[in-house]
Image 1 (cartoon, rainbow, N blue to C red):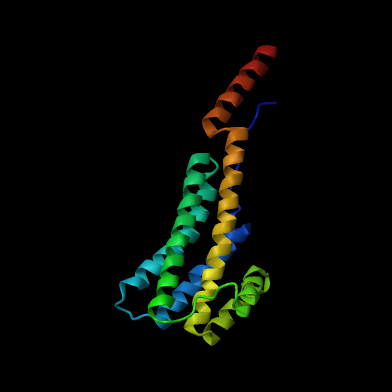
Image 2 (spheres, helix red, strand yellow; image 1 turned 45 degrees about the vertical axis):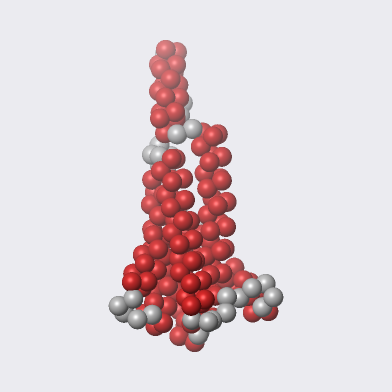
Length: 186
């Protein structure tokens, strides 16, 4: 039987990294609306970086059907966008004299556990109005760290898959050669 070379990919909505990126986007949108001035250029930059993180995970996943290279590239763009957003949150805390929670802060471990939990998916919209700017920035920083970690692991898996299966052109060539071989047997 001839090998299928265009395997449908996608499924990004099931990726924990994508789900976390949606939360990061929503928090960032809320954060910029409530804690930054409307004329501040940082508002657009932060919202666009958060959006780029989310959108590029989705686009890379969908592009994977025809291009492993594009999938890897866009997943890396998502990671880079979130790293940019991380710096914006760190800058916000630093210039306003707010604390960037370190490992010595007992709240950080609770925040990390919460950000890793399934509970955050349902609870965060109701939680946002109750958080201070410092708490919200540290929550988003925590989520960004966790998400970029997941994206680094995803990129490594994507690279392994590319090395194992090749790109779509290699798959097409294998499928065509297999089809010819099957035709010759008939």
